[in-house]
Amino acid sequence: MKSGKNIYKAGKLIKIDLKYDDAILEIKIHGDFFLYPEDAIEKLQSQLIGTVIDKNAIKTRIDSILEREGIEPFGFTSEQLAEAIIGACK
Image (cartoon, rainbow, N blue to C red; front, top):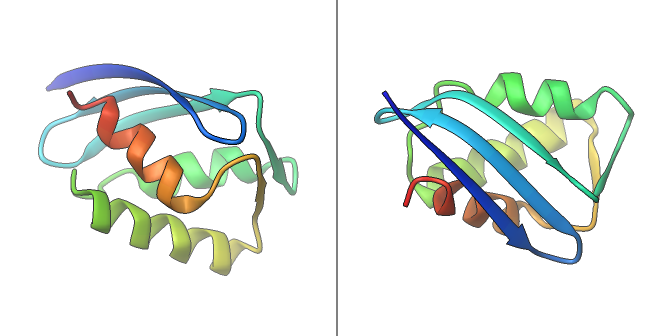
C-alpha cells in the first residue's frame, strides 16, 4: 500500500490524502470548496474507494457519483478533482 498527499489549486483549494495500490483504498478530500448537499463529501469519498488509479477512470467515476447522488460542487470540476487525486499518486 502506498500513500500520498496533494494540494491542488482549482477555483478553490483541493487537498487530497490518499492510500492506494492499483486502486483507491482510502481517500480524504478537503479544502476550501463547497459541496451540496452537506453530506456529499462522505458519499463522494466512500464511493471512490476501489476506483482504479487512472485519471479517466477517476473522472468518469466522479461524474457518475455527482449525477447519481445529485451533488453540486462549487470551486472545482470533476476534471480538476481527478487531477488532484492523480497528483497525490506522484
